[in-house]
Length: 247
Image 1 (cartoon, rainbow, N blue to C red):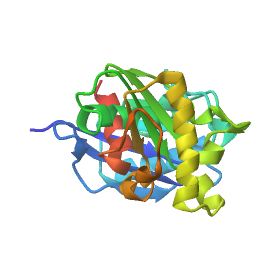
Image 2: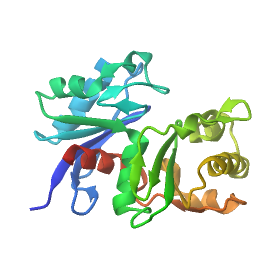
Image 3: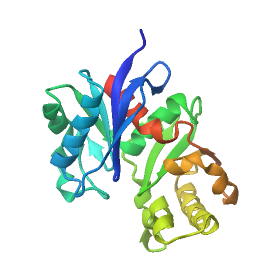
């Protein structure tokens, strides 16, 4: 009997989840996705998380990702979510809404990173590895010899006087109607800045854009570290959430 745990990935536009087969590091069933309510308040989002978990009739532990800093189950920042999340004991809130099932909450990029390091592009990689999820914002997961340094938030580094994610996220590409070349140049500048600070051996690029690496990775030059697309693509957060709930 394989080990299965429910993972839910909360994003700025969608909330998706599925039971995860932790022996394979993949979804055990097709994922279920619902829209993130606008405004994305704690109560509104909790309703949708319950909806996703109930879709599978799940009654065991649940792992949940959140796009912000999470310490001890408490959400500390909420850059692309409603400001009401700051200071909320999200693990307790969701657990009470899910009839007392144990809930583990962690940063979304950290979850994706843990999944990639175990089952994906970072498997068996030592040294310093940085996963960057490019999407509505930029999420990051920083590893040294396989150990996670939680809540690194490298998407909020300053780049030319701007919050980096306002320049190099996929949203910045779409909002500015940037060509792949123009956007890749911005991503390159961002990677060069992160490389100067951490000298990683490997960059893993995740988020929805990891499905089409050929559009931009060949356009990035002058970075010493190896750069590869995430292997689990957009399911990495769900898988990592389930892994965190197991521990």
